[in-house]
Image (cartoon, rainbow, N blue to C red; front, side, top):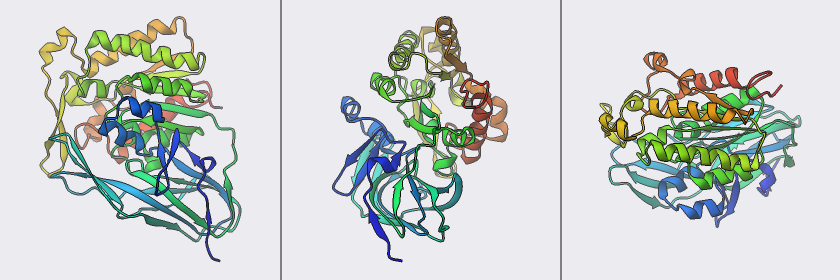
Length: 386
């Protein structure tokens, strides 16, 4: 049968905070317009427009689905090209297909100079076929690290928005690790993996390089509907070298205060950083270096002696986060703490080393997601989703 276009409307999209109408189609954002205007910095704008956790959610009997998108690929100067982003097709909750859209726009990033250059490109088409003729729940998860404009959806049967299945909404904020850097596909980032195992709907505010206790992120989380909330904080504060211990303590309290203004009794979990050898005892700044394979690796360039003056390291951050949560939880019984080393610790690094010394690889994302689901999501746990 011929394929019929269906307008891509907000009720067909899950996991986005806002959809921007562009000349090419709808661009999902994970921060609202007013927040993006406060710090119009290229790294933040790139990170929040990368649709980690964003998916089309449909109910349809279609056997063939086509989706036109306009992707923006990242190109790093002096580094081998990255593979095309992966789209995951879930049918009734099961991974049924994967695909990519070649071409598109590009943003050329020179990490040594801190520059971003945009290059134009054209849309491409993603096609899934051979699906069953029965009505089914269909989700198309967009590439977690590839800014994606939704251009047109076509099917051979009518489409309607996926009904509300009554699953709790989990709102999560963190760094590029939470956004899924180095994960194999959008449903295998560690938060997506945990959400799938725990039966919750993920709203992922993982922002690469930008988990910095920004007030506009706290206010965004305050105003979003959520049944479960988590904040994984620390690695970007250390590697960006943006504050010292005194400011970190006040900033963390303020961030939690803001979230609590909108969610006074919602289960709220603070997660400290996973193991990262280069920053355990060495402060930032973090700078890219060229690895033996020509790829990007990272190294810490701070002075450990400055810890006495309040310089942040991961050990310092974990200790302070544990203290803050213990202090606040005396009057806030719904506030909890998880040591990130329980998700990925020093012993894990021997078997699952960080390929670039900073980000977990695809297998480690699955490991972290499995552990988080096992420890946090389920009957009688911090996030009781029974």
